[in-house]
Length: 592
Image (cartoon, rainbow, N blue to C red; front, top):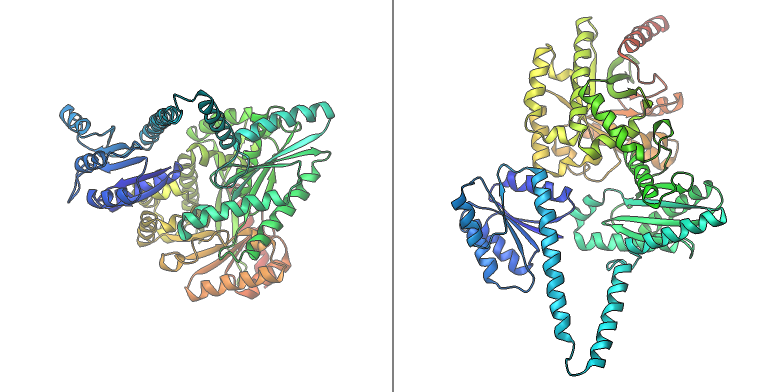
């Protein structure tokens, strides 16, 4: 659903746009009421969100003008305002405003208002269609009216069972087949797999090339999946760029891996054949019935959980559901989140440190701070499990702040001992965009007598804040204060290649997937290009995921400045890290 917004404040407009896009809406942004009206006449939208006070034409006049067009389809009008008196509300309602939203904007309030707006719009549309249908039936010809009614009923059923864009089965049809196939699998003693697939970085493709191109990519993606599955399998469009696949009559879990590998090759080849100008890849998560869940709804949750793990591990891969910690299934996700919330609130998330090695001197020059969680019930919970969960549930800001404080306090202790170390800390998009993050960070660094240059803040490329003016502004403010900025997982997305040179990053941290594939000629060429890019832009280059000496030698020869990985050490508790650093230095001295 598209939403038209009108706001003369660029930052407020961008902030609202970002929130709406996160909620899944397409957004058309305009700078005042006059521009909004011109745009609305060209392309009417179901919802309009307008600021009240704007030059040329304010929000009230915009609403009155839209109502004056007397369109058949109803438009739900929301007015943003800091004015909260009864008289202001009366003026808004008299002008035709449906709802008033208080400023400053509350994201939760916005989401609730939009849900209400969608219900009202759907109800009005259904009523209008009902009235239109009644008008079609000739009152003097009952038989013709009956034929018309049957035709409309068949059309409605067909539309409900198939997606209008791709022609693939809809969620409703998949749900019906899933219930049928689970019952058959139980009676025949076979398995079935439910897979959920997302096009990687689809938002960047959509924003960069337009919605029409994005629709073509979705259609081609769905057709490719359908063409490379058996006739007995089902592909449905679950929503947006997400597809759900149902593979039936499986005897072994290993059959799913063979199917996913074939699909991934096929999608990449289809992109090459179609001469698509952007690389197309996708992430897959899968769950098996009845191994992972006996209930279809639960099975979908398990597959979606596996998809989140695939995304967290760099995308362009398949991950199968491996269960919640301690063998608990998806019902345990709610319990896991509740325990995670309590652990964050009580400071029971610990921080471990993985050494960062200078490739030229082999000295330990820094550490990456990594969150770890030991739970009384579940034991050690993998970050691949609780980090995506924190991101999904909105807990990542508090979790990130806790790890940040612990890491900076540890850095202060190391510096007091005379160790010239730096610390790298992962930064979430939510932390970066929060207006209070930078002031609180500067104050914490000041209290601990640290230099900002000793702190490297890592931002993953797939978070795509570079395409947002507010995100770039926050990065420039951090750099201006002296903090070092690192583009983490570099090479895993699309957005940063054209913008990283315009932003004040200090280093590029190469995506671990490229390092793991570094023995292939193509991957080495990509690595070489990244190193050359870093040299041209005067950026440091760091490689993580170094696991053997041959990879270390190859990366050093290419000109990578710093190395990190299990070849040197796994993440360690602070005391163990200090011992490793001292012993490593002694070994280097003896070798010299």
